[in-house]
Image 1 (cartoon, one colour):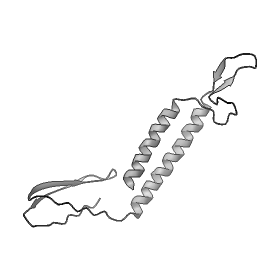
Image 2: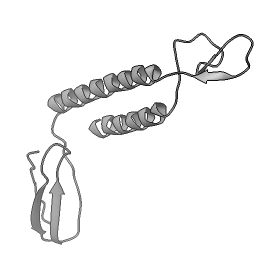
Image 3: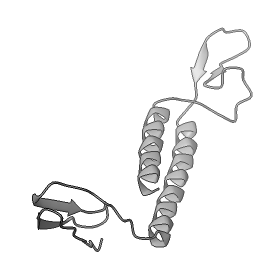
Length: 122
């Protein structure tokens, strides 16, 4: 679930970046909301100011804040994850970590027919 939220956050930031390059006034009732006629006689159009950018930036900032809070709550309520990996005999270096913590590494030697439990406190 955490990976899904992180991916959603990344995609949200990408959408924000693309949207911030556009000038759109969503409250406008014009057929073409990104422009407003200068006057009734002229066919030229004037691009809206930065106010649309501000409200759009604020909206995406709010979404990002909610996603961060949701990620935090999911981490607090999630149960430990167990992984079962079958490997051939040998020496292995296993590293685990989260975005918020330092990575932890263990070096283990596995013999034929042996199983091992490792616990990482992340």
